[in-house]
Image 1 (cartoon, rainbow, N blue to C red):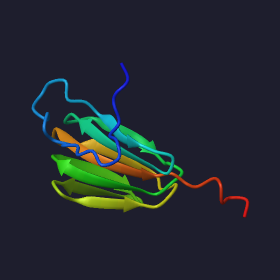
Image 2: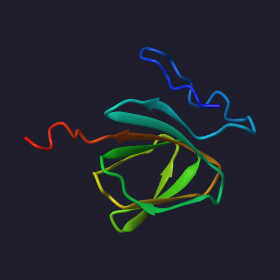
Image 3: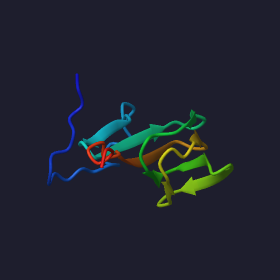
Image 4: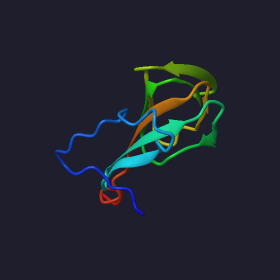
Length: 114
């Protein structure tokens, strides 16, 4: 079953089901220029180093996550936000059960030839 993305103008509560055992990571918004994802990480979960084409933000909504970026590990806790430039290598490791909001800005391919 495909997960429903939020419609324009729709209010989405990112933490309302956080105590549920089936609370999952999912794309909240998926549009041509932006993707917004709720990333649910159990304590100890590691997301290996990777990079994406566009810039992104990581917002720790709940918990504690170590993020490796720019050659250093930094701890993110509730309400912390990190910006990463396009193609910035990064990795994550959840220290506690955590919820992150990831906003990815997709590059515009229409302007690449101008």
